[in-house]
Length: 240
Ligand code: UGY
Ligand code: MN
Image (tube, rainbow, N blue to C red; front, side):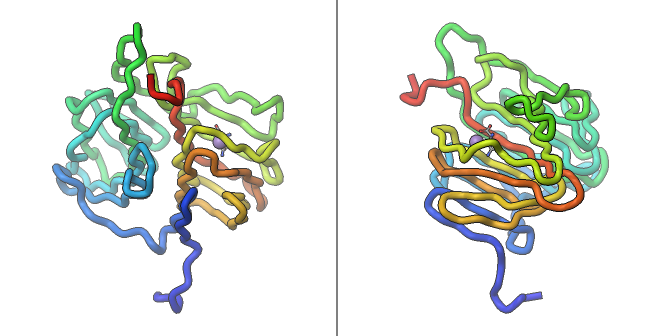
């Protein structure tokens, strides 16, 4: 359906909203029986890459640049002998960790060059399952749960969380901060403020927020809204 040239997707200087009708698939180098939708990359000014890999059974991800974080959206994959089902995730510090589809699978992948911290060892492989992570109420608001998927350890130079909003729950303030975000809407939907614009958003949408992009979200509907969100973390803004 061409929809007469209409889409909710939009690209502005400090944010990007990508809706599934505009996703373009192309394999990345080294992928076997797999393809990728690259949601954000340094071409926009982002300092990381966030893509969705669509894998066939027996397919594998390709060349890994820097660190890799993956979150299984559908199906199952094998990483280092760990079977990751939907909601399973892994942090892979280097290229030596093949990711193989045990079934047809969709996987959210984040890649980023590692920024070292003086006196800290690089993190090793870390594997988990999102449902096993204890939620924290954001600012004491029980209607907004945050699950931190990576350990609270400054060896990690980024964080990936899920945020679950009960219908009507919202961020308590408009945030404006130095960190950038990559966000994949997993369930439900609502209204996202980005800069001076308010966008209807729903499961399947991707959002990139540049540093200092004003941001706010309110869940709308009869079911919770949930998203997976990346941010650079634990490092000095001057990069020292
Ligand atoms: O972690 C965060 O900065 C998060 N509260 N931002 C967001 O949900 N847009
Ligand atoms: Mn934020």
